[in-house]
Image (cartoon, rainbow over all chains, first blue to last red; front, top):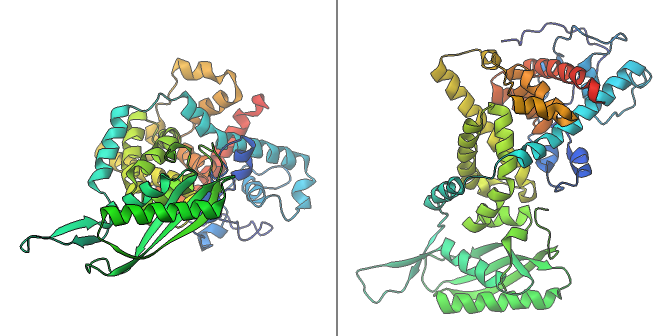
Length: 250
Length: 184
């Protein structure tokens, strides 16, 4: 292992190098990529504790003439060149090195896009293999009992199947796309009142109240026709608005 | 006319897949499969291993989607699972190959003619320079600059320390910026 403290004489360095994921969003956006590309990297990552070994900069036997280590430059770059560090910004070598590092970072953010464009299309059998395994692990949710004319047998419909009905009903309304749905209530008790909540995205330009009402009616109609659920209410929440063609974007 | 999932935003697909919509999951997977495979290929240096790693990652993504708190961030989250699975594979390879030093894996740098021909442009030059790096440096660099993962995450993936990661990154960046100088 190489974790023994070697050089701790970076007293002039920022004592706590920010251990945060790189903010690649700027570089990525510049390439007209989906803006969510690395959002996770920016705000979703676990906040890493600054441990002792993070404070000790790794050995750098190749410090620039001015004594500014490459790691210090990278930490400065990671921090968005803030706060202004005159020792770095006033050294032509350091500024040139910063530009090279920044360029390398921009190219790194683009590398996968280029790799992916060059790669052969995925084998259709590979996808179907994955989807077969996915279907083996379908999310059935709670079993919902159905009335049975035969007392010795029980019939169930799964919560997953009900969700599927809700999604289909909602998607079938022009301009609506179901984002999520929740079935509240004790569905395991036949005849219990249940409340359904459907979150949708509305097509830009559609009158949203009418759209929400259309989805509500479609869901009520579908569930009444195809299940034995006793609906107390179906609530529709328009949580997002989408454009006609935003494929790939978030 | 039913809503077209292929035009749906990542966040919508992720939410629906989390609730069991297999079609939404397939659309999400197809949309990012190229990137996932490219990332895994960068990490494992093998197309075949990358395909295996992405397959394991895909199943894990399906399984863990209900735990994803920010559906809009699904792509970055998927990429992390890919790197996790890629390193699981690298580790198991190392055990079976009885090789405990990752550097050995890079003793035979890939120098195929197509790669060299592609270095007529800056991106090609970067790829070629990456191929010449020791495997551990290349992996750490990709995790950081391509995957945007934190030093702590990288240390976990590679089974080293944050200090070691920073050192490897410094060496990788130094080599890469030097080799890329001609393409400025």
